[in-house]
Length: 344
Image 1 (cartoon, rainbow, N blue to C red):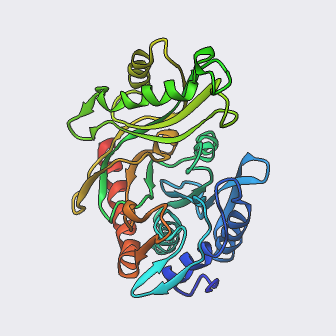
Image 2 (image 1 turned 180 degrees about the horizontal axis):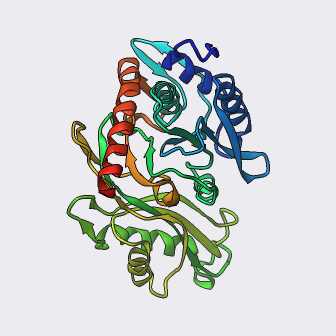
């Protein structure tokens, strides 16, 4: 691995080095330590932003007046899958979500620094779970006016992202011997009946972002095969295009007195800017952008496809990964120009 700042980096080597470290959400300490050491050896000034015990974000700068920040997350979903290069692709956990992106940003930032562009790097933890890293980063003092967030957008500039809200649906029953079901009431049966009605619920849409979508991610309940379940739960995640409160209110009306609805972590939908020379898209996944409001006008761009994120065959094309370095450079320069134009 090249650490001499006078020598160019290879984005595939950097990505693979990050990917060899298991950084499943909650266990990001080793990859953050590696990234800090690597960047400091390249001549960057690196500071840590505490998030929780043993978990930090890092900010890398070369100037006290950084104006544009390249940012993504270094945590990944389970399970850990080590990297390999095969068939013109980089395979493994984090290839496109988002260690390949982080590597592209590191290489682009090195080039931008050579051109005296006031760039910084922000790598956060916890994006795949509670966004606690981004929330902590938003309290950190910064001079950044532009935030370029990295997620797999197939090398297009996303002009909108859906938000997300997590909801727990809880039904209550009365435990009884299963041989005599008339003495009790099954919370599981009531939950199943309730969820059967869910596809018929109408949720709002947006002309740019599209429809609200729903995933029933987990179901639990019951104590034994021969006992009517006294309680059951379903965990639901909605990809939202309107405020979370509006969607949760619809769910409460749907549930009525049949279940309790508890709202969990949510992120709002976001409309973003386009930039001349970049193809655009709309993405359905949520990002850290709503939690990073103090880091400047946001943009969203990244190599790789969300279709392969979170899968055992996660990968990114090496050609796309290499070309994204120049794309991040162009986007950073153009976004700064637009920020300056807005001041006129």
